[in-house]
Image 1 (cartoon, rainbow over the protein chains, first blue to last red):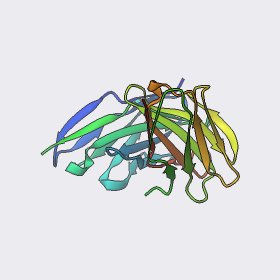
Image 2: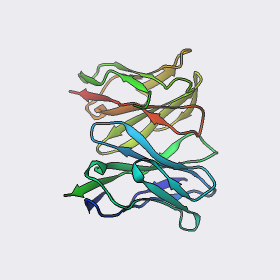
Image 3: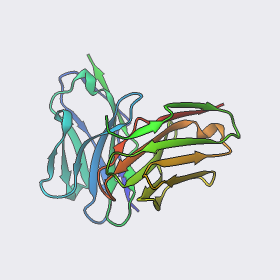
Image 4: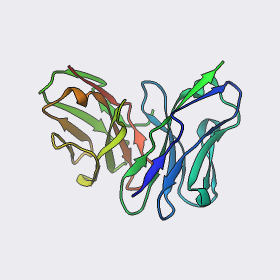
Length: 113
Length: 112
């Protein structure tokens, strides 16, 4: 069965520091991969997605993610975080065989001043 | 603004009651998805409709039902409400299947 793991429930990063949020998935074929962000009290907003092609994907707000098939990972990165990046980040995986997205449990990002 | 609208924003009701949540998808989107987000369960997929037909079912209770109307808006009906049904309910829409999902702002349901 497909699954998505975000191993870090919380991550604290100083403002201006670099960020990497981990996402690992379990699926036999190449999945569709997404990162969403949820600010407090808000809905989920798409940051970036990977369907095929270049494995390094650029998203909004200066985020990027890299699909590594050998590691079954799709980690989200940002070179320098801003206080406004404090939010919860969700990784999701989809596949051709069904219509559902499988969601990770989310990682809450805390920014230290 | 994703273009997906949900009403109401907040809903307070009592156990045993029934409520209806409404979602209007982005213009041109044929798929509507419903999700429940609670502190203990995280984000749970409930059900998907595509152009008026049920397409996929997730962890949706039998007390819950949904439909998508000819104008493509969708309603999620929650009945015999329990305290544990208190959660944020999100609607998302996409052009088709396996397309990017765009989320609405959610309906916060509180069952007392």
